[in-house]
Amino acid sequence: MAKELSDIGLIGLAVMGQNLALNIADHGFKISVFNRTTAKTDKFVAENPSNPGGLVGTKTVKAFVKSLAKPRKIIILVQAGRATDAVIDGLVPLLDQDDIIIDGGNALWTDTIRREKDLKAKGLRFIGSGVSGGEEGARFGPSLMPGGDKSAWKELKPIWNAIAAKVDRKTGRPLEGAAPGKPVKGGVPCTTHIGDNGAGHYVKMVHNGIEYGDMQMICEAYALMQGILGIKPKEMGEIFTQWNAGALDSFLIEITADILKQNDPTNKRKAFVDVVLDTAGQKGTGKWTSTNALDMGVPAPTIAESVFARCISAIKEERVAASKLLKGPKIKKTPAAKKKALIEAIRDALYCSKICSYAQGFQLMREAQKEYDWKLNFGQIAQIWRGGCIIRAAFLQKITEAYARDPKLANLLLDPYFNKTVKKAQDNWRKVVALAAECGVPAPTFSSSLAYYDSYRSARLPANLLQAQRDYFGAHTYERVDQKRGKFYHIDWPDPARPQLEM
Image (cartoon, rainbow, N blue to C red; front, top):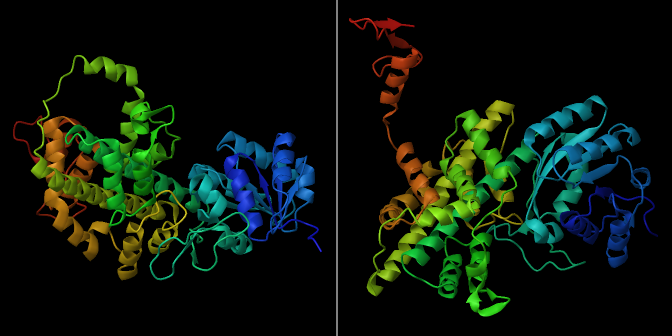
């Protein structure tokens, strides 16, 4: 006998919403769906008549709410910001105490904190859940980052555990082979309760910031092989395939190899990548990550440079005009005998830069938990990123192991594995950054990651001079190396005797 009421509901039937709904139904949960355009709801339900749980199409919000078992669990997957608030406002009068609203969009974490507070005052529970993995992840297993009310998480957990991506318990590698109506079985689900209020959406934001860095680093490796070595896309695709069999094994390296091997659909003699216009869009999460890092005074230069790289890509016409006037160095042809060694050096530069980028992301989360009184488990965060999400990679198993060794690890670079890896590869990393500068090939994330590494390992930086400058023109004070931290001084610079004053 079919269930009378649905286990869960979902509002918003764009591609992500449809795929997540089908994923939920595949795992035996009955799900009600609603979309502002009724025809879209009808079409979606009609096209998917058979699945283990079942889809229930509804024509009004009121009918949608009535179709759900209590306490109601409602997923919202609409545009972040005002659209989400509008949906919540329309739901609230129809809900009962302890019903649960789940925001699965890319919400700003401060909005999530506000929404949870507002809904709690009305007797409702709220979860802000990051959902990563794109269309395929939503359909067959995303990485899910829920934050918010713990009692609500207890209600949602069986569904989230079921639909999340799964990884092998021992190796951390994603379990593959899911098909419509036939999800993968076993493994460890890529989801966990992240923390209170906005923690889930904050961690998803940092995930996306790291994703920005990963993508730009790969693009710089591509640019160096193309611009300095003259390697064609198909050959480069094979190189990325080889890299994917080693330490760089990841979803983004895998799809890069596939893209580079692809011919232009309209002209088979051309590589597809060569006909794609070099302007990259962004949806804001990378910018949010960089802005938040600046607000909290946390160094995240690699992530910020990846955002700026997209920004400069957007001024295409300006760059084309500038290219006719601004000339760089002439690139010398690399001897064939040195080609293999340089490819290996680029790989090492990519891996070292990747380590620094992730170190920055985890450092940012460490400081954020102090700011918002969260208790984040960084080992668990790395675990749930091993499958389903865009940055899924073998590399994340190493991060999981690092936090297992030391849960209070201050920086990934201090972990024995990452320390040893960078020590071994840094000569190649430095050669590549230097070569990029000599040849005029922009490599902003490679170079900023190296600068971050060199800054972090420096016991003394030139900030002493900077602080002296600040004291000179703005009386901003300074501390002394021969006194305890926390004691501040100022030189009365206009006074000819320049006495030191203790502040």
